[in-house]
Amino acid sequence: MKLIKFFKEFSKKDIGVAGGKGASLGEMTRAKIPVPQGFVILASAFDQFLGETDLNVEIESRLRKINLKDINSIDRISNEIKNLIGDAEFPKIIAKEIFKEFLRLKTKYVAVRSSATAEDSLIASWAGELESYLNTTRNNLLENVKKCWASLFTPRAIFYRHEKKMHKAKVSVAIVVQEMVQSEISGICFTVHPVTEDKNQIVIEAGYGLGEAIVGGKITPDTYIISKKDSKILDKNISRQRIKITKKGSGGTKETMVARAKQEKQKLKDNEILKLAQICRKIEKYYKKPQDIEWALKGGKIYILQSRPITTL
View (cartoon, helix red, strand yellow):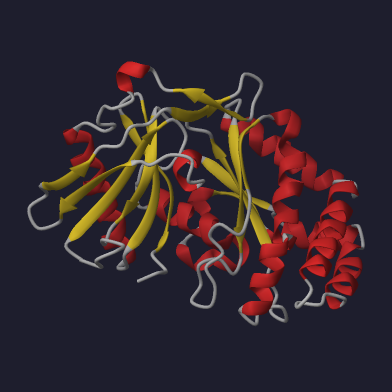
């Protein structure tokens, strides 16, 4: 049984095996959207790992002991489960497959992201509940895959699952392994105004460096509003940016200072704003739903890292 598949082998119907992120990246790859190459370690690999190590029984018995009214009990059991996963031996067959496909990417650094099989479905928006590890190398690839598996059992994820009445449902996790884009500028695009809910406006947020700075709330990004009707920029709000997140020498990420001359400048040029808006409109048309899109710009080229439905509308 195949445990790993490349993006182009998935469509949006494959959430059950590739998770929300994996299925979406597959769908966009097929639609010729500029997505960095990568593969998905299927949810069945995680299930096999739990089965081979007998962890499924251990985890189940611990989850049954949780008292949702006692935050310490959730924390304690979450740590116990994460340690169990961290200490378990990685099945050799799965490891061999992962390294084989990693070599085929011909890249030194990848982003390793959790992709829950219940992600962004109508009953649950797992965005932000699960982990991502940027600038992962061959040396810490398996360790970060395990950490992504373990992130299904963070206190927040455990609580969330109970709150959404999903603790009885089978939730598994696939892992997206994607070529890392060392973005000069990155950000988020909403294909409908997220605050006013105006369907004729696209909102783009942009900042220097890797997108984690915006997602993690470390910086205030530039905001640009674009009209869908006539593809004109309606408004720009330029923010001063002092720090950015970039690649650390040996892998991982670090915060660095933005050169003083660039701190108060507009991050994306006008033509780049319009080009990005055009790609994001194409994605929205394709999905027939408003989208929340993560993007990156490197060497003048725009890459789409992820797209999911806007769940707040």
